[in-house]
Length: 443
Image 1 (cartoon, one colour):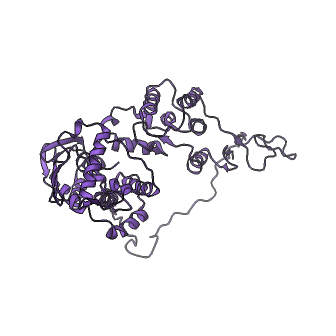
Image 2 (cartoon, one colour; image 1 turned 180 degrees about the vertical axis):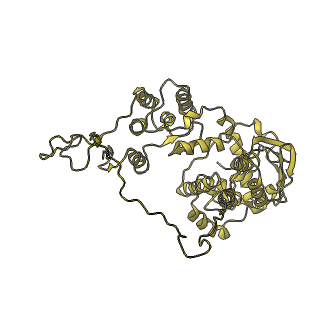
Image 3 (cartoon, one colour; image 1 turned 180 degrees about the horizontal axis):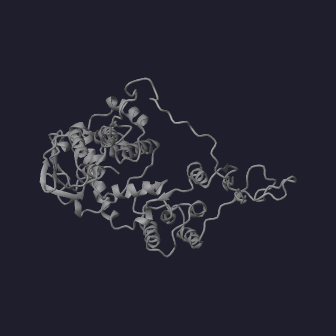
């Protein structure tokens, strides 16, 4: 049997498939990026299938227009972080195909516009893409274990005519004549002394069908319950460990905050006309006002904007991550955000943060309650132009509604009387539309 050598370590694998799995899992050399994510941290996937699901869930507006060959193992070569290693175990898609062109163009645009740390120079990407011009992906191999030298066939003095491994030697095999060995004597009487047959007539057996849909719904419901628990922590925050999530003030109505000696509306009337720096400055000013008691701020300056993170307006300039405490809060926030987005199911982290929820800083709860209103999310599901669920009260009802929807239906979401989206229903995309278009900005 031919063995496959790993060029990154001394491992020798039994098959090309094992080699590919080894390179992908042990060395992470088959990782690919999502060139449609413009974030502080690049979105990296380990499989093209995961990227396809990610694009369908988070980039739904462009998903249908993309060439689906991009999401094959061959097409994903153009999104690979390590194209040289990738091409050794996967034959790349032909360089001149439309899918290859679209993938390369997407990476170029991402490289120019993304705010993420640049992983490598554009010249390095282009040099890797040129490997696709090779017709085959070469992999170093050795012969069966016991060969004196890798790549040299084994030789035995007693069998000088030994064929190479995998060869075939035709051997003539003469046909034998058919002869009768024994002829049974006919039986005149019954074969057994019983008057009736002892074997039962065949009975049709019905095997129970596997409730596949129920299992899928249960699995999806479990995942959504995990997302809901993470969402609850992000909604209220868990300061000083996790800041509350920012709200989507583009869609939420104006609310009124009451301080000891003032009443104010939020967000400001003309906030969309402000510059990014001014949006952050206004949010900071209001946070200090709400946090003060008799004019004296209660919270330390390095914590106040994390504590009042829900006030920050969309499009504000990012804040510096200057202290270790703030970096810790952001890391915890990202963990919960990944759970809400379905990227992570780290139940242990979630449970540990939930244990601290009862000891969190609750001084902002009154403002968060004002933003939530009376708890009525006022969300209407319109399925095939018919109102199916109207004015759902909480996330539990929303989750049950999503699970029960037929995925082949045309679904619209109406929030406070305004249509916010219309999609061919995907259970996850419905949840994401609720979280991102309506309620929170989980980023």
